[in-house]
Image (cartoon, rainbow, N blue to C red; front, top):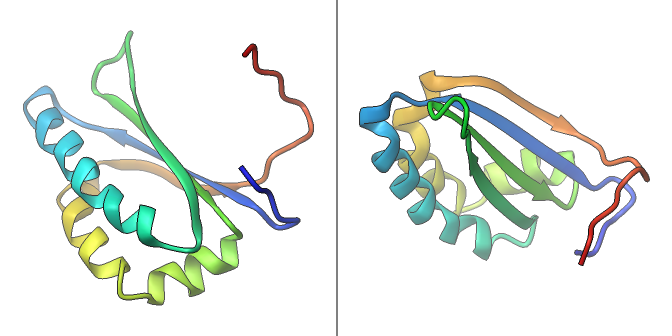
Length: 108
């Protein structure tokens, strides 16, 4: 994944009731095509809690926080994306941007 100097990671933490989880996952499956077509999105993943199955974390990698907020959110991709995930907006516990540090290791 190519990283620019102002690369940003958006973390969105959700609390999703058991009866809504399939709909939530389907919403992000459908919404993903708008992230994939955006020049500002470098990748994303949705992770699901094991100990607390009502917890989900969505991780979106952006070229920069500014390009996310002023590029993607003002693009033609944003409203179709947002309309798909909007039913879960009130389930958000955190939605913040983070920057990476050089502290990282992956076993490949």
